[in-house]
Structure formats: structure tokens, C-alpha cells
Image 1: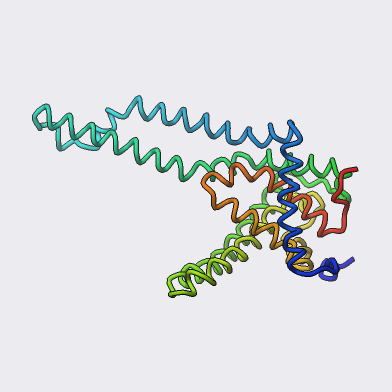
Image 2 (image 1 turned 45 degrees about the vertical axis):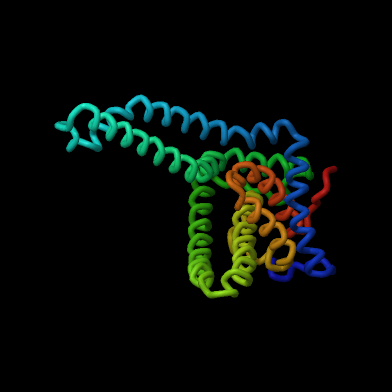
Amino acid sequence: MNASRTIAPVTGAATRFLGGAGLLLRGFGMYVRSPKLMLLGVIPALITGALYVALFATLLYFVDDLAGWLTPFADDWSSPWRGLLRVAAGLAVVGVAGLVGVLTFTAVTLVIGDPFYEAISERVEDRLGGTPGAVDVPFWSSLRRSLADSLRLVALSALIGVPLFAAGFIPVVGQTVVPVVGALVGGWFLALELVGAPFYRRGMRLPDRRARLRADRPTALGFGVAVFLCFLIPLGAVLVMPAAVAGAALLARRSLGQAVEES
């Protein structure tokens, strides 16, 4: 069947939207009931945490040298003032490093976790009967296509996100309409991104998933908006991503007319 002609379920848009959000909840259920999936989901955060602890410990070890390097003008100061300045400089370095660590922890974890999330997605599909129409795509070809599609999504997100950001400064509208539109837009692009792995396993690209999700847009938006709102919570992306990946596998199968119930 042509992707653009996929027939959406004959139910109300609100019901399908809530059903899409329910796919994230089902993803959580599948994730927490499987120790193997939970282990796969935790490993990226553990790797990132160990990496950051090692980097932070190294920084603390060399912080006195860094403070001296940052304040060479204080070399000729009298002892109490030079020491106080360099203690302050050291604390500032540690503080900035901590802030950068907090801000980048999620992004680094998601990058490290990509192969683990791919494994979660595949195992979820295996529990649902396997991947119909699976193709064997070489790793480098898959990576190249995935990066190309991701860059296209980022570009589209920026084209829409920048005007929305500017509109956020409009009185009343910016505090009411814009956040809702932003959540819908962000949710749509998140849904498109998260279903990438199941579609790639079937040899399908970004235009295919866009057409399939568009055929039942309320369901896709319900799932994407639920994930988007969870990601707004500090460290929410790290905690929710494994369940979101599992839910995305369900969304992809539903959009392709394949079984979403465990056999």
C-alpha cells in the first residue's frame, strides 16, 4: 500500500492523541518489566557518569595550576591577596565546569546511548513478532543516511523554531499560544526522529516515516508531545529516552499496520 494512502483509525482526533501518549506509557511498561531492557537503558548514563567523574577528578587535581595560569598578573601580589584571588579563581573554574557538565550531560548520554537505544528498539520489536520486511543495511551506509536525515530534521526544526522563539516575546500570545504550538511542533519532530530506527530496519527513509506518521497525525503528535514534555524535566531525556524508544517502536509498527501486542 502506498504510504501516503495509509488509512488512519476511524476515531476522534482527541482519542487518537491520547492513544499516542499512551504509547509512551506502554513503552515505560515494557521497559520496567524487562531487566535486560533496563540494563541497556542505564548503561549510557553510567558510562557518561563515569567519564564525567574522571574528568572532574582530573580538574580538581590540576585546579591550583589552572588558577595560577589564569591569574599570572597576581604573581607579584603579597601572599594573602594572591592566595585569596587564586582560591576564588579555582572555585570559579570548578563552578563553570560543574555548570557545563550539567548542561551537557544529557546530550553526551544520548550520543553514547545511540547503539543501546537501537538495541532496545530491536528487542521490543522481537517481543512483538519481529521486524517484517527487515533489510540488511551496512553500518556505515545506515550511519550516513541517519546523519543526513537528522541534519534535515534539525534544519527544519530551526526554520520553525526561530520564528516561534521570536513570537514568544509577543504579549499574551507569546505566553499562551506559542508554548502550545511549540510543544506540538517539537512533539512532531521528536516523533519523526524517534521512529527512525524501526524504519531504517525496514529500509525506509525520512520521507517514508513522514508520510506514515502524517496519515495518523494525532497519534504521532500525542506520542511526541508526551515525550517533549518529559524532556523538559531536568535529566528527563536521560530517564525517559529508553521508554521513548520502546514507545517509538510501537508507534512505527502501528503506523505500518503491524502488530503492537505481544504474542
